[in-house]
Length: 156
Ligand code: CUA
Image (cartoon, rainbow, N blue to C red; front, side, top):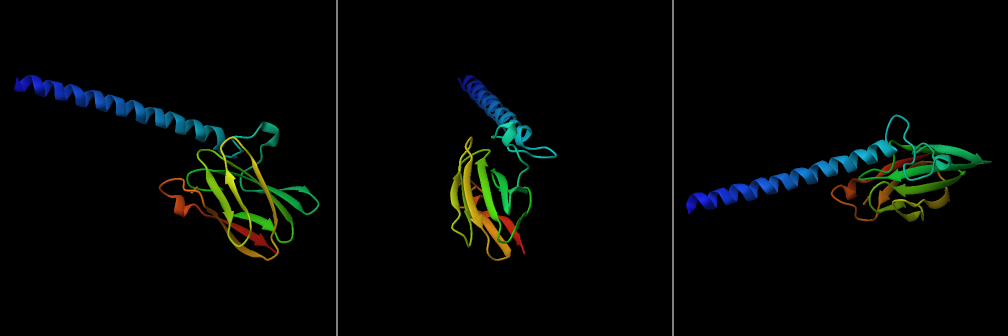
């Protein structure tokens, strides 16, 4: 009887390992999908249509003294690098998410919106003072939520 029980246990462990391997492989496939959609050398907004696509985290001039900055939040960053904007210009942020909900908050301003996968949130702001402002995340999004901060550098 002991040997039979042993075999059953080996069988159960093998099935568990197989299931875990399949889950892990699915996860990699899904993750890779996200990367190819919005990653690469010149990242564009994965969730937006082609005509709306803009480079991530770069201020694009859209009018007199008006700029747009597109951001794709993902675990756990807002932009590929520091975002440079001009003091006194109207900056419109277009914010979406590649994975889960993130809370888009810019410290020292009243900017506060939720980054939602598949949707583009818009918020405009004029930075009156030069300096460094931090985008933080105010919606719990997992392990490194607290470290999800990106600088906005306001150039005079
Ligand atoms: Cu992103 Cu919390």
